[in-house]
Image (tube, rainbow, N blue to C red; front, side, top):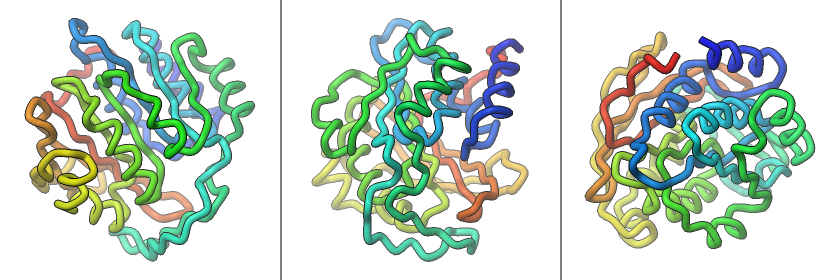
Length: 251
């Protein structure tokens, strides 16, 4: 319960775009990662650091590092036309949107999280990701753009350890869904066959559907989606993982 209280404290103080259920799902995946495997946790897209602070506390409990990728300058300039999300709400992401500066994120992390459990990697993904090669136990990406999602999947997905899990917070965006369903992208850019999709009704109160896929030969997956309402309409969360739904005894 101490972890839940700490999460609630962060939510009261720091703006964030995730639902409590999304945070608990990923934190549980972090805490249920195989202790016999080496690896870190990854967050890509930190905004003001609400999720970062919460995930850092779970990383501390797991005795692992959380590696955080973000420009700390907001979403990059882009020409992507998202139009509407899958729920019919407006979806648009301009340069500088969702900006949390490095000073703001580190401040929130110091006040509410575990700074020593984090490695912050500032910069645009295309500049910082090529230098990253650490094995990953769990990753959480919330970056809104197709170009950013592609950059991340090309690097992070092959680094997932057996039993690893990759969550995307952008399952409400048709352009992201199209990317995940693109055979050529998976074959030519990621280096594996397109994962298999399977739709199922989530445990969300909104009762949404989401795709599921199998990853690399040692990484198979199920998916869930949760949604909440914000300025861009409803947002969904997909997870791609190798293990059954994680237990809740951590909380």
